[in-house]
Image (cartoon, rainbow, N blue to C red):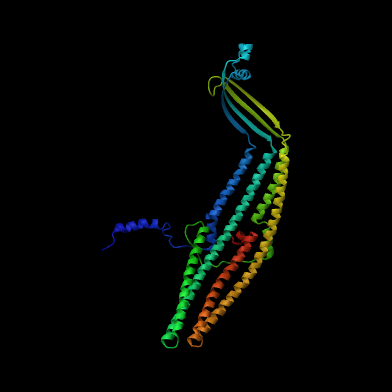
Length: 448
């Protein structure tokens, strides 16, 4: 009996729902270059920081607005029998008559309504504080842009770490598989020797135990590889695991001067330099409080005694003014001293950051030398372990060594294989870390 077509259609429709990445259910495999390009576009931290920079840019518009004219519209409705107010309202409405000069009408006016429609503007001509605030907003946007570029470098470093972690886990999985293969071979040899009366049953038990331990390590290695792939996917902004290709990451170590010179213009150092300028500008802003404010203003108004937006009378005025706050307690002086302390703080932070960066570059350079030597030694140790394993295996097969010796050298060989993989990736990561600490990571990787 064949499968109903309706059932097949249902499966085709439901499968994409069960696996949203249908067609990509297998882990996507990417090279390091592809991973970095994806992360720089899709990483959540980078996308969030990009919005932070955009928000900071809008502060420039906010600061600039204080240099532009302010235009207002206002509609008022009032009713009064206050003599001066009633007198003024009638004048504005252009309804003033001779009998309004009568003493009784002046002293005891009737209640009067006034609907006033007014347009007004004010334009700063000289307001030093606003000019300086605009300059600070531009500086802070530049600093935040440098922070954003440093965040891209940080994410790139984290992606490379995750990539190498996944690559290491992948190699560990191969090492575990090779160890399991060797354990099965040991089990086979022990079983043959026991059946032929050349070995002990205890050898079979020990080989069986080693085989089980090998299977456990293989399970753990598979778990570590799955976690590493998923973490790489998170850094790439994906809701799926990302596998790594077997491409060989080629990295070059340059002379120390290259990294030291580059570190002086590292993105966060550049941002701190800009913030030091901002702190200097803040002192000027505080001092600008002692200067006057000069501006122009004007208004046009309509007045009516019976209806909103009426126009029985109309009038206008223009003005120029100077506003100078001569005394405000000690607020301005305190603000000036506060800004000076912040400037001194920014200067110390800048100097401290430069010294810290120089230290981190030197430390990273020394780590490279250590990692390179350890990688070379681990390869030599692995070759030695492989030769030792071959020798002891041959001796065991010829009844010249106990199985304990064979299991010991196998354990050493497994450890040497894993250590060789780890040390090689440690060396690569050390080179990348040096590029990150010096601020040349994007250039060294050919990304920017």
